[in-house]
Length: 181
View 1 (cartoon, helix red, strand yellow):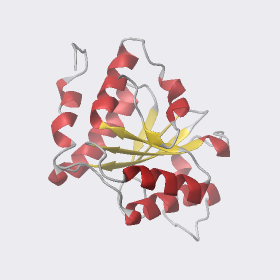
View 2 (cartoon, one colour):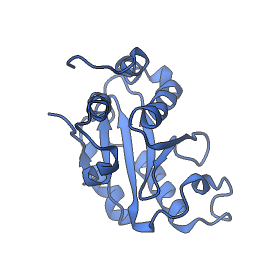
View 3 (tube, one colour):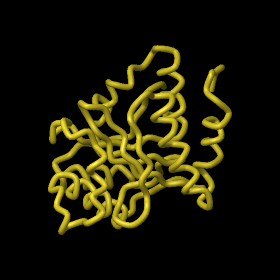
């Protein structure tokens, strides 16, 4: 990474993302990065039957699942099914389906067709693309995968005025996101 004004706290994500014992730290710092650097609303959730975080404006929302994996994150049908449940919970917003009501923190004026899913991890390996395709096809919702390096490059680009965080939905094409090549 070239010279950046990102805080060392965020650069540390390059290490945290590869340490499975620090998954909660990865969730916390990623959610904070979306809030303080990308300038988006961000709420850390986590725990049973809730995504790790939600990130949003009054125009769009992201359901975020973070994965700190030393060797990278590969396809996991159980993780795909979990994301599908989050997406469906948000669409239905039924307290009987999920009494945690985690979705109430989203801005209520976000159009229903402007919600997206996103995995954030150290890197994506193996047949992860199949997980993106499966999740999108099962929910009719677009999403993406953001590796930690691109997360930080994107944050740096936001700081430098190269990337407008309000354009993030344009990157939700059911593939790995590349802000800067």
